[in-house]
Each structure stands twice: as structure tokens, then as C-alpha cells.
Amino acid sequence: MKRATNLILTVVCLIIVASAASFLSACSKEPYCKYDFFYIEDNVIIRLTDLGHRQTDIVIPASVTAIGERAFRCGGSPNVSRLGRVSSVIFEEGSRLTYIGELAFFGTRVSAINLPDTVTSIGAGAFSSTNYLLSINIPPAVTSVESFVFMNSNLSSIVIPAAVATIGEWAFAHNPSLVSIEFEAGSGLTSIGGDAFNGTGLTSVAIPALVTYIGRGAFMWAVNLVSVEFEAGSGLTSIGNFVFAATGLTEINIPASITAIWEGAFSGADGLANVTLEDGSQLQSIGARAFENTISMTSIAVPSSVTSIMDGAFGGWTGAQTIYVLGRSADEIPNGLVLGWSGNAKVVWGN
Image (tube, rainbow, N blue to C red):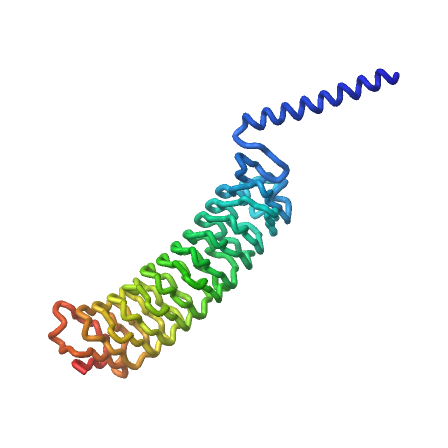
């Protein structure tokens, strides 16, 4: 009887070992391996399993080097809700993660996440439509905040590391809870994409000196934005189309490096009362509708360097407002005055 029992145990052990070997062999032949919570290939999380989506807390193994596109987004399984249940993501100590793919956490319930310093790249839209996301860090080695990456999140503040050179289009847009942005000392930022902060709750922003480009509508509809400062030595050469349109600005000092204020740049900023240009201003052109309906301004001084003022640049201005065109007469701006440029404002030449 004892021999029979030992024989049975031996057979059972052989079956278990054979099954494990069979699984490992099959796993090596499949596109990726299935674990309890993840499908993983070459240390990359491809996507969550249904069981993974049912968890509230997920721990990312230290061996994982990348999180693939749409990895945490539910795939329409009838067994889990579209958003899944994951609200907490933690990275094991010693994490080797370097890359987070596009739309990786799109539309999830994650409320806070502390990314490891090993991360160097975060794909476009990776945390977009995360309405529960209250806090996140951008690791110090990241050089680009990609388009749409935090759009429609619920962040209240963000710190942009010094290594970041570009902020993509719509990166933080439609996030009214975002009231604070800080650029680390020595910021290498050179470019802010179109609509990057459209519709945010920012109250103030200091544009780093190395920024040379701000895209269309970058701060448009940031209705609480009352203060914008340009760091000393600003290299910005233009204020793009609708960049500060419909903001809450009350005053602004435009750097001497600016040569063009484009269409609608301050349009609808109805609380804007004071616009000054730094000494030595190089401003040459003021675009159509640039200061349209800036009804709180009583006057503006246009420097003698300006050679072009486009249609409706001061549209909506009334007889109670004055435009001083310094050092020029009406016929000294060749081909530069378009009918209706001054609205109904009083124009004073040559002072």
C-alpha cells in the first residue's frame, strides 16, 4: 500500500513538473505571457487582464521597463466596467521603468501616481481623461511633455523639470482645477504648444527665458490667469494667435524681443487694463483683432518701430480709449494701416 501511495505521489509530481514546463514552453512561443494581472512581453506590460482590471491597487514589478500603449485602458470586456477599478498604481523599489506608452492610462480611475526617476519618456495622451487624477510627478529625465498627456485630468499643480524642452499641444488643456505650474530653476523649456493650457485654472505663470515659441491659444480661456511674467533675458520673438485670448489678465509687460503680436493675441481679455512694452522694444507688427474688446484699457502706446497694424487690431475700442502712435504720422506706416484698425478709439500721432 505504501509503495502504491509513493508511486501515485511520484506520478502527480511528474505531471505538475511537465505542466509547468509545458506552460513555460508555450509562453515562449506566444506573442506575450499571461500573468495574474498583466500580459507581459520582454518586460513590457502589453495590457491588464480582466482580473487586473478588477483590482483597486496594482503593483508594477521592478523588472518592467515599459508600459505599452493603452495598457491600463479597459478593452471593452463584458466582465469589467469600461474604466476598470484600478485607482492606485505603485512601482516596486528598484523599478527599471523607462517608458510609458501613448494613452497608457487613458480614462482610468487612478487618483495619484509617483513615477520612478528612471522614466525618460511619457507618450502622448498617457494620462488624458483621467478625471480622478489629483497628483503626479514628472521625472527629472523627461525632456518632453507630449501632446494631450494630462488633458482632462484633475491635477491641481504640476512641476516641470529643468530637462523639459517642449510642452506639446493640449498637454494640460481643459483642466480647470490646475491652478499652479512651476518651472524648475534653470529651465531648458523652449516651446509651449498650441492650446497647451487652454481652459486651465492657472492664476499666474512665469515664462522661462529660453522659450522662443508659444503656440496658438496656449493660454486661451484660462479665465483666472491674471498675471504673466517673462523671465529676464526672454528670447521670445512673437506672441502667437489667441495666446492670451479670453484670459483674466489685468496687466502685462511685453519683452523688448517681441517683434510681432499676432491675430487675437489678447482678444476678449476684458480685464486687461495696462499693457507696457519694455524699453528698446523691437515690435514691428500688430495683428488683426490683437487687442479686440480689451475694454478695460484706457490707452496704449505703439512704439515707432511698428510698421504694420492689421484690420480690427483694436476693434471694439470706444472714443473713451486712446491709441498713441509714437514718433510717426499717419502716412509714415507704409502699407501698414488697414481700414478699421483702431475701432472707434481716439488716435494720437507723433507723441
